[in-house]
Length: 388
Image 1 (cartoon, rainbow, N blue to C red):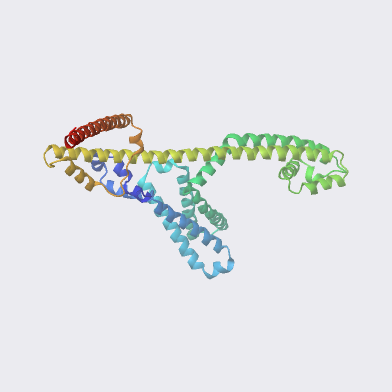
Image 2: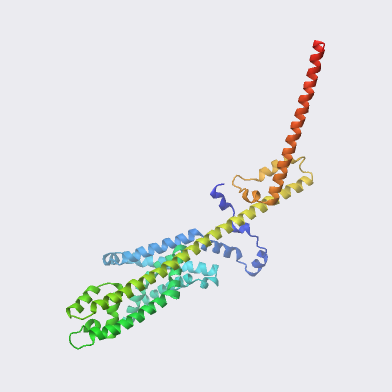
């Protein structure tokens, strides 16, 4: 069957709500509420919000050009207000559709945070006078870039990656970072006494105190500019400096960095596999519901036709079958897999095959008898003709 036929059955067809009357009494706007829920959960609505976020990001990128910002200042102001209005309308629709469950989602809370920041910026633009307000306004304008992160709320794959990354940081990475900090603290104390403790012939700039030593070791961890730092130690003829540098780079960079990456990869892999399993289960549940609905509908139609036959509306079974064919559509699903694996159906099918074998055997015996009788008749006629 064509895939387009799947759209013929909605979730409302699969589930019959017995509390509709009671809900309508409690909430008079039930139909409108269901319409809003359907709109907010539709793919078209999400695609429109995604397009709005992308356009907003594009306009913020173009606004960084000083020439274009001055030339199209009014356009940027109007478009920003339009984007803010769209985000506000989205918030109102979602809060109306799910006034309680809306706050259960961390992504919805992030969207609300970005929306509040936008309105605070609008307020400060109208009332900003002092240098403090102007500084806060610059910060809020910079935070407008958080709107682009709202893309995560509409892409399930990005949500899986972000959730896996946050779980990794919360559960495992903090321990790794703590161990790395302890290692850096230990080596920074050692580096201070080795290379920055003496008043003369020492590197006070990089190893003169704990903070400088920690910052230097951070350069070792990232392996960025460590050769220049080591060159200064070699110029001061620090004994054992190369062994110290190689040992810390091996522990801090190769060991801890690879452990950090391995933890992230493992958690992302587990989260991705879990997401795939959930998708498969959701598809199976949808297919199962559709099968149950189709089988139930076909059973109801057969039952109604049998009742009509019992009432005498059909003269024979053929008329009933023809009437049943008229109720079928070309895009109806025919569930054959479940029927072929049903024990009752298998038992009936095997019994039918036995009956067919018995009928074939009886027909063969009948043919043998007919051939025998014809042969006897032919023999008698031949004897009469030739006087035998």
